[in-house]
Image (cartoon, rainbow, N blue to C red):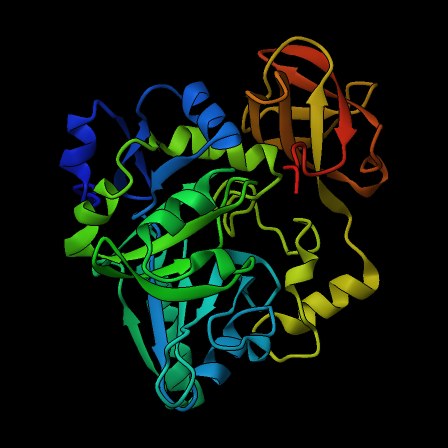
Length: 367
């Protein structure tokens, strides 16, 4: 099957980007190099094309009820312009995907929502929403808008000034997880103060056909690929769908994955009963962050052992941190090994390397 391409595929190619397959999309993995792009975001700003992310719109009289019953957070808490991080779970509480749910700031009448599935999940989520809508006999319209919108992320300490200079509206007034509609270079966009890098920044939802105009409005800002997006999110302790959790290969619930704050048990949603049980009984394993003490880099799939070399877990994400200049990683281990400072080992290319459990995030920006 041919890979899907973002609207700026030829623009990125002309800029010298290297590409990779991700979630069924042909996406830029780097432009000038992962480390250079990573450092630009930590010290100034970078712009990412994240048009591989999906966009599903939900509207109608029962839109709130449908969103509430299919996501773990409390959708009813959202005012117009608000957004929240949430999970989409199976009946057994296992995470299918994580998402950000936006309530549109300019709705007419009933609340209207957009949620953002991870790359390659939009069709699955559209089907899930429409099937449950029909099963529950709810009055809601569900549109997959993934082919209608591009999405860009401007991230870093300079992001506020950069976006404010190009936006007609006062985006500097936006607080975290709020959004507004405003023209950027004459193109009406949804601008949200959200991101996936551990830095301040904005995500811009842009009409597909106007993507190049908005991208060029930030000419001079370092373009960044998925490579630096991954190292940035890992330093910030943020999860990667399909890797740090996967309903088939790494089935985990939000309590195991360290994102129990997304679960509001006083609401009704698919998987609620299983998650209530997990909260009451506890879980046997949890996700931890670790640093390697010895030389080496932990990679996805490597074994985690105790100090007696008994396998107790598996690395889900790992890299050499460009900011900390140390090898870091994430993995699931039994709860008795989760306290910061606990000594572990990671098997790197057949050799046991000393590691230490660390509090997450590894990196936290200056406020």
